[in-house]
Length: 239
Ligand code: ATP
Image: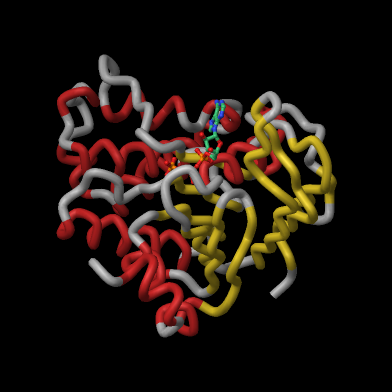
């Protein structure tokens, strides 16, 4: 598998506060990579730095061999990187279908692609199909997360970055979402998954990274991390 995404010595700041300290991280094509860590460790900042919402002050970010570190966020989306932020940010007063159509804005010149992808999203998420005309604000938390993921898929991403899709959801719904993420991956989309739910994430991922106060402290195959005492103690003990 070749490297799709490669972060090398990435440093990001909020004003004078350094949130990322020399991050090295690679995602191979076809993989599910999970980034684990506790509150405030720098997980969201890593995704925001990749998608151009936060600018790395130094280091390099390469996607399919191209340096994307200075591109604008919309140019990064055009390259095929789509970010589903924490908290979902769907448009509550629009319907399910309208939200999904907004996700395909980069492909609006290709109505056949939009139609085909919309059908595909409805196959992945039958619950969204059943609610296609419902206002998104009236969906349950799990359904809103499904909608956020579905909307991201509407642009046909090469790399889908998910920030805590399990947040605030009941275990059964988390399982459902994780199963769908696995299916999206098996259909060819590479995934970078940020999670606090280490148990669910390591079940799904091929590779995992642990970030603590802005630094990567562990990196291994997911099955190795599941058995690592440091992981069990810090992230799995109560799960
Ligand atoms: P959480 O799961 O709580 O979101 P996280 O691992 O995603 O945690 P980040 O949101 O990346 O953590 O935050 C990393 C550090 O950067 C924290 O110390 C946080 O307080 C700080 N930080 C995040 N966003 C900002 C901001 N907009 N301005 C200033 N500091 C910020």
